[in-house]
Length: 492
Image (cartoon, rainbow, N blue to C red; front, side):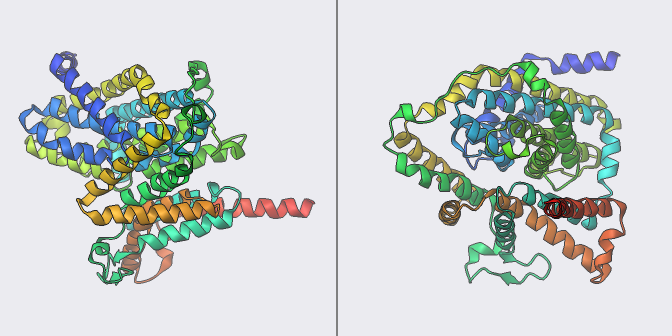
């Protein structure tokens, strides 16, 4: 009891609360700017923690992390430009809601779902971190490949009216991931002697191009449209009782995000897409997804924020980063002389639980900040198109340039923007391509490692229980709709 009181006493100081909120505000701003991801924000603020004690320093970076993941939904909902890859799924229903004048309700749901997902994973981190970490440790190349394949089955659920077009886009995305050096043999693939392509296509300029630049080109024809004809922000409150209607989706998405986050090397983008697909699959009206269904926002935002706490599970208990952001956090811990791993819970028990309770506080303050500044966020839609588009272009250029500080990434963004615009004109869905770009490297790298282990025997993927379960579910996801359609045709 004395230890708990001591932890609370050390945590609830004016300095810690100010730093915590500063990190959150900075993260939300960074996350809402296209291309400036939460990982980039944490990296930028890492040097500032050198002069801070370990607890406030960690709270600052965790604030940027949590705020950055949530912040990506803001521009995704308001201007169809996801600030981070994890908000790409939020755009699917968030922007259509904004077009209907329901931007406030969409932003409210994104905020509440983000907080619920974040709190869920924070409590999981606090109570069952060692158990989940031990389970996640069992994942090797075979299991990683299986979960990547499972993630790719999402494409069949978000392909719109044409599954064939969705599959074509998915294959196009997988083709993009093969550009660069072969991860096993080190051979150039589709680089065309362009040195910058040797490292492959970075997802940030690709995503900004496909989602933002393509949409900017489409909106260019409305540049002289009067402001009153643009998207109108109507203050429609989201009653808490309406949020409770989606408790099953929020719980399921929290669990998906927590599970994905606890698996090292995955991330919030994967969790949001998987959760979105599961919400659609379990919905009574799946056809409404992609047209402004608030449940889609709840699913994606709850899952991607649930990753934040769960990603700390392998970090703190095993010293393994759960995602790129927590990899940077390991550097922050080393700077403070703290070694992550099982002994941390014995030698630095007070510090560990201070961070865990601090993560709960972060999500509570995120709700407060979001509620206070949601009107300011909504003002983005009031900016005239002829002013907004140049600002967006500048932000997109900055976001792409900041990836490697090269003009090549900006050119890459423009190329993907033109490709995205042409594909939209031809009525091809862009989301399957983005999913394939995210999951492609995970699938290829681990498939090839597993096949090296088995000397080319594909049966190895069904020899491990976890991979066998994921692959079986993936096969069923593909076959069941096909069988259902065949039976319907027979009945007719």
